[in-house]
Structure formats: C-alpha cells, structure tokens
Length: 256
Image 1 (cartoon, one colour):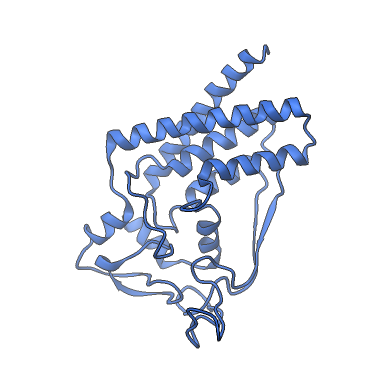
Image 2: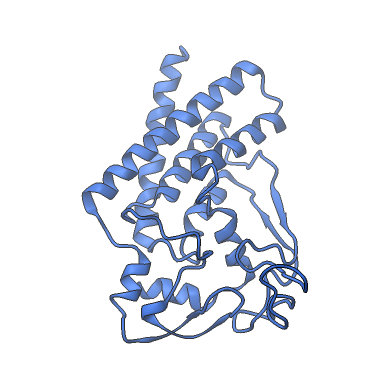
C-alpha cells in the first residue's frame, strides 16, 4: 500500500492524465471497448481488407473475453484488498504526504480519508484487486495485436492531445460555471504541491509500440490509486499467455 501512497505523493499532470485516459470506468466501454477502438483504428490505418478486419476483431474479441474470465477467476479465488482499504484501514492513524483531493494538490492528509485519484462519483471497483483486469485485458490486447500484425510497432494513431484544463476530475471551471471557486478552479496548478486545475499545459500522450501502450494501461492504475504492483505484473503475464493461446487456436480455425 505504501508504494501507492508514494505514487500519490508525486502526482503531477502527466500521471494524472494517464490515469484518466486509461480509466475506462462508469459510463464508458470499459477496457475491452477501449482496445476494440484502438484495434479498429489500426485496421483503418493499415487499410485492412474486410476479411482481415473481421479476423482481427475475432482474435481481439476472444482474447479479451478469455482475459476477463481468467482475471475474474483470480479475483474470486484470492479475494484481495484494494489500495483504498489497505491505506484507509491498514495505515489508519498515520498522516500521509499524498493527493488531498480535486484541485488541492499534494500535502498532509489523514490515511483514513485518503482517496484514489478519481472523481467522487467514480468509486474504487467493488471487487477484488488481484489480478488487475486492466492489466490482463491490455496485455492480452497488445500481444494479440503484435501476433496479428507480426510487429510491435503501434499502428493506430500514435498520439493523443489532452488540452490545458480539460481534466475529467480537475478541469478548468471559470466564473459563472457550476462548481467555480475563485483562485482554485480557474488557475493552473504549478506542480504537484500546488492548487489549481489540470493539466496546467497541454499534455500529449504517445505510444511507439503495442507493448508500451498495453503496459501503460495497467501501470496507470498506480497513480490512479486502484491497484498495487502485484495486481499488474501477474495480470500482464496471464494476458500475454492467453493471447498466444487464442492466436494459435485462431490460426487453426483460419486453416493456417
């Protein structure tokens, strides 16, 4: 749990935006849907034929489905705690140096009221942490894409711009807008230990390889405060193995 507190201690704009970009929480398509969009973007970029696009989506769908089954089987078996429980309960009574809440930056906060970097309406998932679904799904996805394209090069659009002040949790709020607090929501933060909106300047997220994007999705859960490292690394191992098994089976079905 203390490793997650440390991520919170150094929570700057880039890890915040990574946590938001890969969050895929309530009212979204979740991690599998995010990877389907990336997969379709790659198919468009590579001008795949209809037949090959169907094959790619078939491969991705089955890899993600099996990743979900394996991840939730582990969650049910191990029934492990999440960082919010480990920190609020396990470190109760301590004063932490961590993120204090939207727009407030990093500083002293009681462990019993520590929160992940999320909106108040975006709660920690109400199921076990081990293994990370994000990491398992994303590893299965990146490995399936590597195998299908026979390259680790990221073939979808390589960069995403997140404009200044457009954070989902700490976005700019000016006078006359709901939630406006003068001198807090209308000024950019000047670093982790300062108040203000995020990001203070434009942030550009880029990926050069499938693996880098997949690993980033899982790792984003650390600054987000949703998973510990063991949840991630073991989920990656499971996801990679699943993708390889699914790909071998797909080749058999395709007569290759």
